[in-house]
Image 1 (cartoon, rainbow, N blue to C red):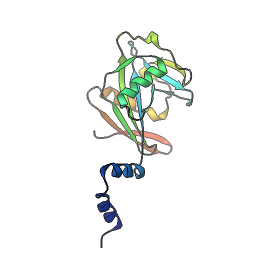
Image 2 (tube, rainbow, N blue to C red; image 1 turned 45 degrees about the horizontal axis):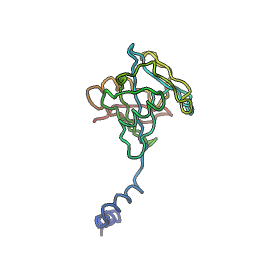
Image 3 (tube, rainbow, N blue to C red; image 1 turned 90 degrees about the horizontal axis):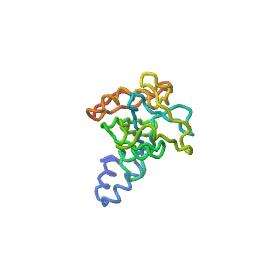
Image 4 (cartoon, helix red, strand yellow; image 1 turned 90 degrees about the vertical axis):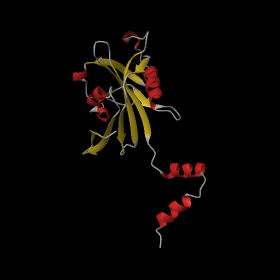
Length: 178
């Protein structure tokens, strides 16, 4: 006698493709997609922002809109939050966090032609502050981003994959295999 799971999977084979995809989307875990940028000032400092809904500093970025590609979202979010036009200059660091059900793409970015650090203006609806910090003395950033600096430096060559696990309430990022 076949298991109920086997029978269900066999029956799924008779369901039209569109209906099968919708059914899988209904029962599969869904993840939020985020896109953020590590933006360096010409003197080496890194830009961090404070959101109106968080207490700690974070990298500029936000959620990927439905149908939007993560690199496009990263550029859009930086422009919306800081008025800075940037170009992505690295492969992404991709962080997978099963507990938070989130996949985050972090890119290293440079100023687009004609844009300078002086163009920085915050969107005061979402951002309360923006500031440049020395990479070795970053303030206590939201622990969701701890461990990204080393991965960002490596990402210029190829995509880096990090997995997030939670231990005693602390998020730990460990390298994965891309």
